[in-house]
Image (cartoon, rainbow over all chains, first blue to last red; front, side):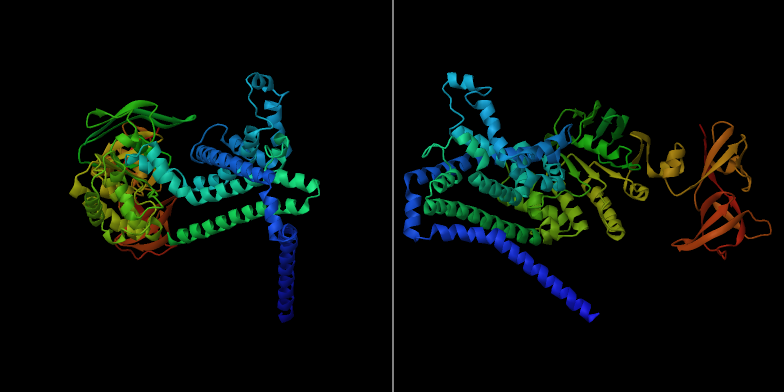
Length: 276
Length: 345
């Protein structure tokens, strides 16, 4: 009996060690490598690489794309989650499945659809060209591709929560005299705020890091349509390893800050929840 | 405020939730909508509140046509079955909500005064700063009621107000709610599936079945003269026995029970032929004698004496007696002393 328990303990320890080792190799090691490579020739060199005009343009563009795509997805995600969670209508399940499409489809396709629609030989290409509107290989294309890829994050975080909460509180607010906007602002929104923030942060992390879809619609014009992930690739292909890793490190840092903020929020949210 | 419901219909897909419902509630009255689940009582309550819309028919309150007025403009207090308190607000803020969202909210001092007054009235003043998850079910019920009362409603609607509470809390809260209604004189309707609750609280009870109001009367009249076999079976735990009516006496199916003369019937069938009889637990006589027709299946004490479960022929009936020496397995002679009987078909 006692031996058995010791055996169990040994097994548990082995599994635990395996998990820790895997986490280190798969998650921590690459991260460490990025920062090591970036700082291989010292901090000044890395900073200099980031101060390069093309790098600065990439950073600016990435922030701009995220600054447009994330709010759009926040509003769209809330609206979609609200419809799906609070109402019964024909095609509800279909809509729920549709929301997850960007997760399941390859990012290349997510980019390609926009080229097919708005590219020079696309459905609306001629119409756009006549009016001198540039979507593909320009900011609008980058934004569209990013919105498409990151759409599910907010909606997917909100749907289960809103479904669980039901419509009771909103109906109660209506009987107390609240109008639609008052109900949303004073009842619905406060109830989902922590989940919403967490979804928005995830959405943001992905919006800044997206490579595949953005790569298809970008055209890789340096200093103009290159986002940070694309810029990293270009630098790497030109054997500018330190510069590539410096930009990559900055990107990783942004992601880490986002995750840290999310973890903090969740702790805050759950400690509030336990207080409730 | 009086309520007038005329010809209200509501369908959900293919099934009818309400069919040609008429209901009149006088000002200050306390009315119960009583019925099994799925009978449409909650749907009717929601239509009154404006949370659901009738497919046909009209609802008017104090002579004012309400059918197309949205919920937020109706000034009808609604207490939800699971209270639906705002999770992220304190109890105080929950009650203050209806005042704060007004186009011209009252001054803060007035809000504080009114909310505090309401919380005192429902006896939870000390919980003002708590959140809904930090208080008990009965306290949440009171908070939900205070919130509904804060808008000075013209009409108060309660959906299964005691449904989610323990039996003990239920009883106390029931008495308290009845007193509160007397004190406020506010026209109120509540939904329940518990006939005891309806009988104890309401001035009048509307019994619902399959989307229709089957009978609408005072508790006394309902108990005394149930309009049909459904109401008779639904109210009180009466035994339901098949019988035959010959115009002068009621003959029970199987022939083990002695027939009952017309004089012993509280309600008699309208025409000779097959009938169904309802006999309440205290409307029986049990005799220990040579000749027997029933066997005791079980016995257990109740507040008014002893309740016996007896089998007679293929039927099982429940009988309440002040006292009896009978034990399970023993035989006795069972007879009905009174019954209500209805035509079949």
